[in-house]
Figure (cartoon, one colour):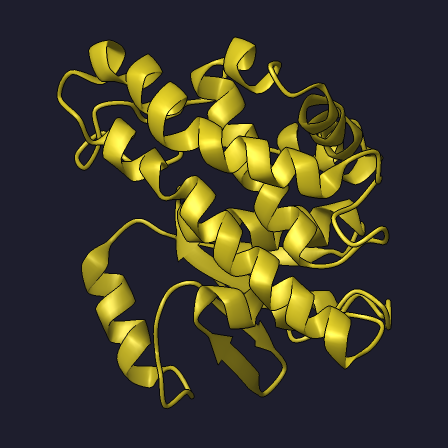
Length: 221
């Protein structure tokens, strides 16, 4: 697939995985980007060797001659490209709070992979959600309160939370609905024009992960 020099390229496997918060952020801001999907490991190995980065990896974002790898750094670069000067944090303290939230949301979404890889997914799902995920949901719900966004204004970490909620909601919408403010938070993002257009786009990756690696692929209907 040829990459355009006039727009960003976000590259990852043809699944949602680690790249989806990046895609959500760009779609939400209606930023046109090339969503490059690798489906062949040999093709990726060849491209990886030629990638102009000291840390070649997936996902990556390419912006002209600039290539950024590592998922959180890629998400931050995508946020920078929106032109919203506050999205990285209005001040150094807020930037630190964003890093704190990102680390916490990492713990919140951690059980996702434990659940989806389990051969008895349907049997263990509810138990893991209620014992391992619910305590984190309680804390992030309390932190959000009645705010529209986690810090009271939109930052890149909001797309990490939206993505985690989106996956958990596909597992069990009833589970997420136990926290009305988180349900409303998910709805606000999901109903955004850019997000809806992205979901309906031809290249939208519908699987969280491929069936070769997980029991539950998280396929969107």
